Length: 234
Image (cartoon, rainbow, N blue to C red; front, top):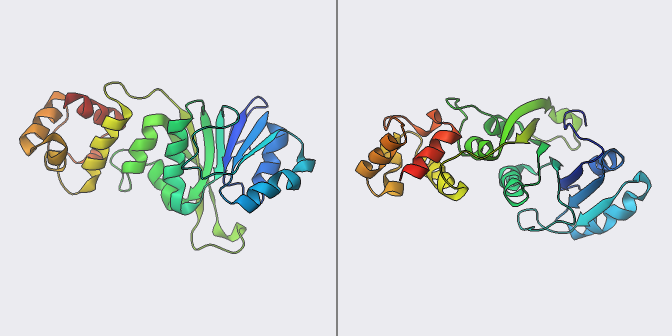
């Protein structure tokens, strides 16, 4: 709870509450919890299971990747995200609910490393850049596999984030198109990797130079602001 930096005024959206063990801790500590649960049986049971916890609970029985509205505007996201959809769920929630100011999510340790990697890191890539569009992020601790039952095959990590202003220059959609192209073939220089996006290697080089980016660099060398400049320079 301390790592999540929550206040009594927060409206927390929790994705995948399951049996409600985390929800039970959140309810008395914040103004409201909106629990998004894809399993209809678990969703139906949550209000009864957590009746003694107090607080205000809304349960949304829906897939977090499909939900477009919530009963209240969330100010924080706190969740133990399913490993196979952790990145798309996190990015989707940040895109659709701009009221989310900060959050703490538990993900597979490998995913935590990628989400928080800086430019130049071996694991820096699409998740790193796209999360950086929305927020500043850092790792807030590790969770060994031994604390779970049954014991999974991987360790987990906590990722804390705080929303910040999006980079200037281009839209999210246009910037993400450049990011996807740049990392589609990691070993290629940006001049080559962005050829399809720009129309030709020469057009890619022209856009890169207008953006102040060396065409000989690779995508992993750039921060999100540089990708936004490239998108704007097309």
